[in-house]
Image: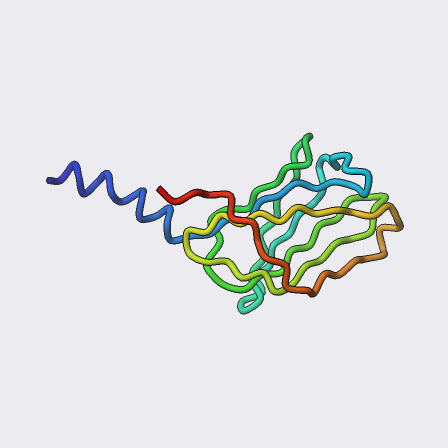
Length: 123
């Protein structure tokens, strides 16, 4: 009985948080390695940062359910910002980011409600 209880704790903990991942590319679909990624919870202003790997892939995990803003930047490219991202408990969401070549002080803001891609399958 105690073993079953102990084994269920990590599963419950995994379901209490959300994650956001994606790939950063340029307009020609070439990956952009080591882009700086910041995810900010809108209600609290708490930010979590990550860096894309050599393949342009990033993941930010252990996020609370709620509304978020995503900001991605890399030298030589315009900054990217997307608002209105709503994460649900246990939801692994994917947002792929396309950066445009430009000055670092320029920024592209996406405000439309594009659906998140949920790559997890329920079993």
